[in-house]
Image (cartoon, rainbow, N blue to C red):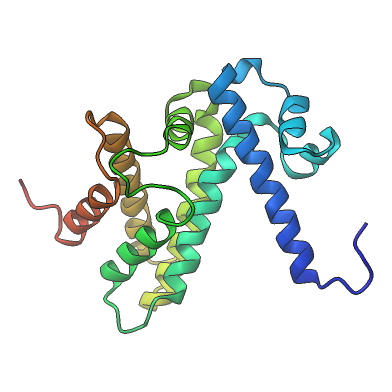
Length: 207
């Protein structure tokens, strides 16, 4: 029950914190035990909430795990809307992506956080999560396309450009993250993402 006089903004922040805690708990336990060995009750206990609270936020373990990917993608779209209007589109897109991917996770360290890296690998490669990841990618690309349409004065429902750019950006991020996961020895992910987006903005010239 919320306290009398508590502002809606604070309540929303608390709800978002609970959502993030549940998603991280799902990722952590799935990495440690294997997804099939994790119950909703385990995730709720790890996040220190009641099991019924999990069901208020997610319909499945897979949705909880994919939520971190979806939330970060939505933040990229929000960041793009905040970028200065004077920035060229591709520069604004790159800055929005790098800004959000650099918040909260140690992406730029040559020795990346092992739990986060394992979580990304789980989200990308676990067959039972592919459906949720595809759903999350579709929602993310729709939201980024809307932000691109607003910035370029195009119609997201009638013009191909915003959806084309959004799909290309999503593909570039996925390829860069996959390269990061495969790198031996470890390398920073930021230059990989910047390089992928720079190649797109240049029209993907042959190497």
